[in-house]
Length: 192
Image (tube, rainbow, N blue to C red; front, side, top):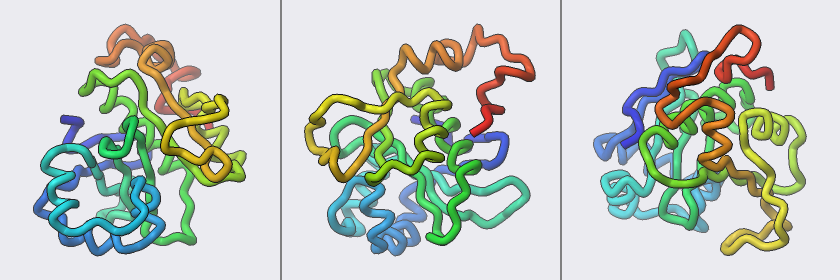
């Protein structure tokens, strides 16, 4: 199980459990969220609860530094092909790339520390937003450049992945050990 609480430089992520499934279900009625989580329609409450309990869906609330109210969700989806990470802010007019980057890096660390999976994916709509592209690439994600990817229409979505060997090269081994950081190359301080 990836951590209940993940601490980053700009935000704290607190994992949701099935006790908060009602609140999550209400949010999952919004197309921006259910599309981000790889669904074509909102899930039923029972299905969402089952996904959380079975750990095919991991969701954390995002609490930016200094705030006691969540501003969005970050999560990992494991029920739709290869595991992928998503970030969703409640206010669609607010796009906080720095907080999104921090949340993604926290999840990447937790994912590779706590699972044996070889890769974690990220998808975003085409055309590619250059700032988001740069954020992902600088954090270790590689653009997927093959012409096809099962279950993904690459004309509509861009795909990125970070593989375990890339994670180890960027951040040290899976436990975060043997990584010697200094002020210039600490991965938590990457400039996106």
